[in-house]
Image (cartoon, rainbow, N blue to C red; front, top):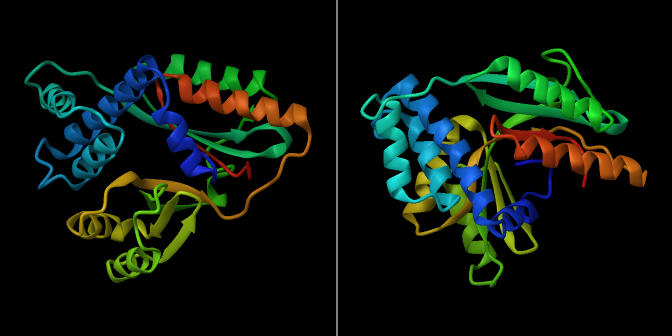
Length: 242
């Protein structure tokens, strides 16, 4: 989950191998575990769990996997303890990078993340060094590759449901809102029958930077790939205009 080419990232993930899908399910399982421990196993009461379940379903995670993760986190099947740690740093040519992790071993995760930054032309920074460059937003992506949806209708439905921004893109619609409005917006659009390619709270860069040096572009791609491939890493955000 990174950068501005959200739709291309989603399509790329859909095409990944079963091994990659299993890794995504593992990360979603950790996220479910954390929110269940914090707010309980009932999604009608625990709004964050409801959000993560919606995210899991948009990634085609089977219902039985979701149920098993909830039962495990609530103690019915034993449980794991994960800690949320956020790392901030710079990629090649000063690209701002935020890495959200859930880990049961902070020393391992910190070592891995620092290694990736050092290896691919960046450096890990202090907490707060780049987070001020990003805003938290609810982001919903609706697939329209077949052109089956009417743009004006989707836009009106989204705005009436509380969206603050609607952007038609090649093959999809991107809808944004304040985090406080996210659950209501998602539920309203769901009730109208829309299916989401993605629906979650994300960190959106206030401004973006371009990389022109081919070496920097290669290093930045490798940094993102290595971070996203790590089981402890949940999300990677950056301000590189890909």
